[in-house]
Length: 247
Image (cartoon, rainbow, N blue to C red; front, side, top):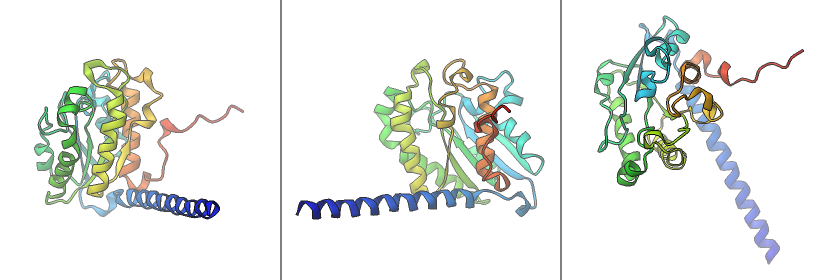
């Protein structure tokens, strides 16, 4: 009887793991299928980068040229038009310090890249409004999807918080904010861009612990470009590739 139970459990476990693998594969395919081919547009692809001070370029030496949206524009080239819609200290949560994204909606974007959640990763903020996060994010995605251009939307998993400056807490980021973003993305059927994992071992790039410098912004731009640009969708960002072995 015990052997039969173990056998049944093993079969169910194998089926469960197979389903997870299939789901992951389908998610990967979905992410790739959403990538944009600029040749399919009769105008430069309009990209709206929506976010907080990280999107503004805080932490770089020159926000206008070294922030991730500016570097993204350089990487993508003339067939793309990248615009920044960002404000420092803003939360995704609507009842805290919400980001006003209506200017981004009015820009008639073809692509929307949202990088919010860092300022939501505060203990008091999450304790008060954390349960509203997924619903609030779904509402934002729905608003963008309702724009006449029907833009494709990506949700970014924020970079790590390397200290508790300004009360921004990495434990809340990793255990609460990021899972909530992933849940919202799944519910809204939109892909995510993981900026958290690739930057975890790059603490030297975060002078204040929260805002990446120009090197961090470059890596973010590479990761975003790899996600949204069909011709680069399967290309691993240069900053994450291991250096070639010495001869």
